[in-house]
Length: 79
Image (cartoon, rainbow, N blue to C red; front, side, top):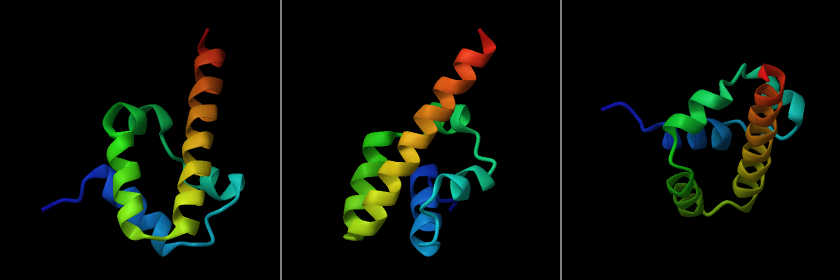
């Protein structure tokens, strides 16, 4: 079975605790639009809570904020 997108992202962030800065996120070459169109954000939060790791939750919130910022920036650039 292939992991759900939410679980795969959380596993990656959990296993790479040094991902904490904006530059770390941008090095992923992450497709924010694709992620937001496929991921279930409430499910992502639920899964993150199950990890029971405050640092993971904090980094996830930062990543989600960067995704929103990146998506907004791309939307503005395309108009």
